[in-house]
Image (cartoon, rainbow, N blue to C red):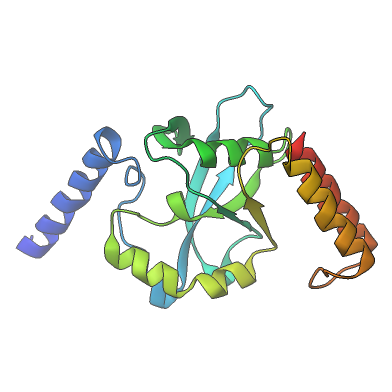
Length: 195
């Protein structure tokens, strides 16, 4: 056994230990993604009702061979406000704004494949972060859809969404492609997220 191999194995164990005890972003990440090979991590959000704790599975894929997935764009929120989540059976914490987004997106009966930067990229690995940011344009273009989570709604949120939907209907704003069914689906999604 060479020293390099041994050092690599010790480093993997160290990252796993740190991830479970101290650093929530590393617990399931044992090796750096190969961005040149377009590797990404997809999070599969397990089905559940509103009260069910958030549980996910995560797997590495080549971007061009990944199963259909959605991307989630969101405001990270307060780093001190954390909520529990299970990924590949391991408990960890994520920021409450992400937990709220996942809770709102989750389906009662069907799993949903997502790319979510906070957990799909090893945030403690500066090299991986830089490399993954470099392929984000490709990643978002491969996503079947992109969820944009602005946070929990308030009294003015519904009015803003109504305003946007009215402008979409009047043609001032346009969806990239699609027909009225897509607009209705978007409206229903927006309406459901606000309720």
